[in-house]
Image (cartoon, rainbow, N blue to C red; front, side, top):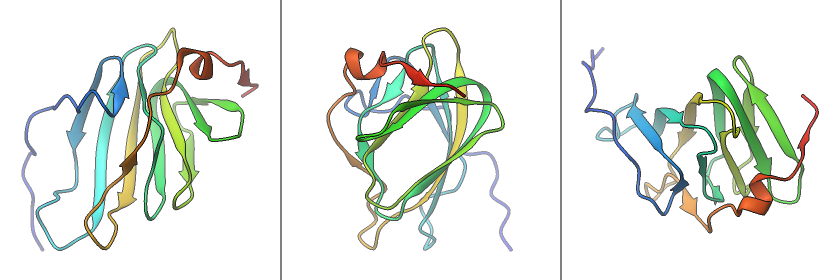
Length: 136
């Protein structure tokens, strides 16, 4: 058993990964043999990830607020506190806050064999972000 005391301070991620103001708290340490990654991600209104994939998929669980999520080729979906979203391995997707609300989610995924957490792509355009969300 290992007790891991509080992690490093809240960080701002690289701008290549997000649009808008986003803050990340690391939950699971990345300096161990475990490939588990866990983060608490705080999105300000309209902030969102860029398109990306995870080698072993990802689960996000919304803890507060209202957000949006989309897989490439699918509709924009509204997500709310209490919702969980599973993205398949290699599935191109994005997620973030809606235009009028903050949103926080927990993100869980396993790094790939080479230690890669995510493969980041292009930013989500305003047109993609503003597409009508499916009814929640």
